[in-house]
Amino acid sequence: MTAASLPADARALQAFGPGKIILLGEHAVVYGHPALAAPLSKGVRVVGVPAAKCLIEAAEPALKPEQKEALERAFAKVAKAVGAPGVSVSLSSDLPVSMGLGSSGAVAVACARLLLQAKGKPFTPEKLESLALLMEREFHGTPSGVDHTTSARGTMLLYRKRGPIRAVKARRPVKVLVALVGERTATKVTVAQLRERQARWPKTYRRLFDEVGRLAELGAKAAAAGDLAQLGDLMNINHGLLCALGLSSERLDAMVHQLRARGALGAKITGAGGDGGAVIALFQEPEPTVAHLLNEGVSCFSSLLAGPETL
Ligand code: MEV
Image (tube, rainbow, N blue to C red):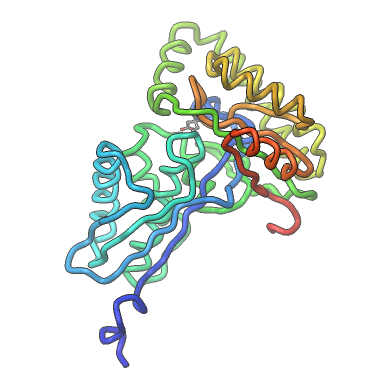
């Protein structure tokens, strides 16, 4: 049987892009400072079947009209760059959308991976990342690149926008509870508002960004050494600085404090923050707290970010 005569399902291509969380360093990373980020177990899966045209057809869960339009526009960009292979793509995701968990980066990585596979030629990790960035730019304007790079590499990273990016090998498992606090303003709006403030008072904001970058570097060392107590403490300090930068809200702070009261080693906003989004909390074993919170109606899940078994 030749490939062309195979049933369409058997010839389907598949690709995955994990979501991400930022343990330390969001926003400062936009200004060139390092951030400690890691992939989530949840993410975006795409399936492609042979078709006359290169297009993205369906998404599950269904997208709002403006999200669908943004996805089609971004997909068209990357499809053109790859040479528009004849493949029809459908997408499914178990990652909450617009919560600061890197859903657009995960979409970009999954689609770029699938389209490169559809071309049928070997490709380099650099090629994958540069195509995913094309798509991320459509979604976010001027992203630092931390989301799609973490998704593409699938490992904990000390990420820098310019300069060396380092994989962090954690000596002990690093597990977080991710709590969803609610809808939030789009990342590009929160990033633009902060840019206006820092442009007005550059010296003050530079000092805060410098300190956040230092926390990320220390955090990478703490994760590598398996020092979860220090990593948690750094997360708490980072949350304080995110508050100082005007990136928290009453409900985000309330969740951070609730998780600390339940024994988290550290808790903070993850991603762009602002008025809503997600909070992460570091626990040695997050599962019992996940069960309690789910019982109380809080939307949350746990994820292993790094550790000996993920290397
Ligand atoms: C978004 O996941 C993280 C931000 O730092 C923006 C970026 O890095 O592009 C807020």
